[in-house]
Image (tube, rainbow, N blue to C red):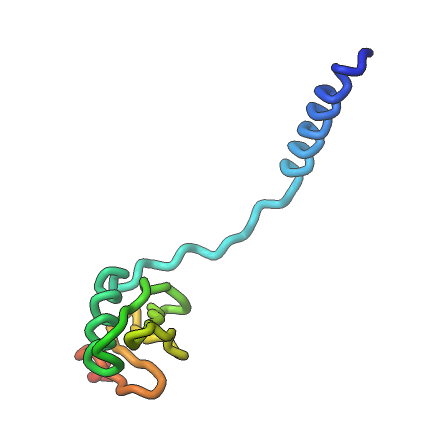
Length: 114
């Protein structure tokens, strides 16, 4: 065996070993995917922006909503020199109710009945 064929043979052996190791892993038992929230990401972004300009600041911007534990979380930056808010605007994925620590909670019509 010459010196030039050794690296190629070693790479093939390593790849075969990795393939065997991956094939022997148990299947992942992932939970079933959750249904899509009633409030879309686009709608949550609009709700957060309206809430931000009405209750938090007339100057600044909101980030894109992030889905977490059944709610949309939207961080914001306010002021002429943007400063990130300490708490996110939280929007219920089911009803659209909005809250943010230190600011008013706005309940959606569906949420008021409960």
